[in-house]
Length: 148
Image 1: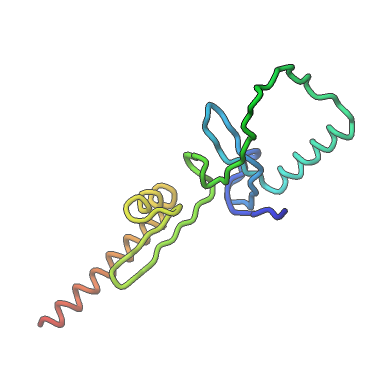
Image 2 (image 1 turned 135 degrees about the horizontal axis):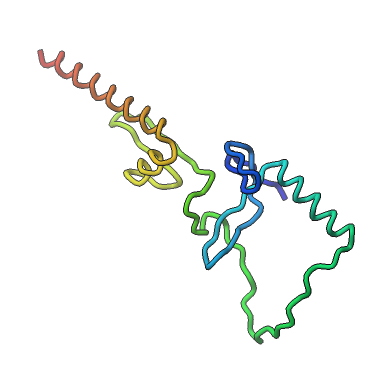
């Protein structure tokens, strides 16, 4: 099994812009959130788990409940399908084309992508808007010179 390390925020130490790996979802009130840990926190967690098992510490007592006759096996869904309000990792691209700028963020395009980019990366949005304005100004100058 290979781990996909990405740049994001660690949920344990709150470091940002560090390599993190997804360790599983956290679920509360029917909502899911992806939990990411940096390398140091992952090592600390693994060490704590191994210490727990090596010391043979008993866990909390299991609840004695009777399961229904026909249960549905639990399923684990990919993170793309889990509702996450603000994922720490996103894919953002801005393409400079013949007809202007095309933005794409988290699989969305158009105004929704520009909204995501301007919220999460205001400097990138400002640079893209400046580039677009500069391109428009150049086209106006060329059109005026050709018309004259």
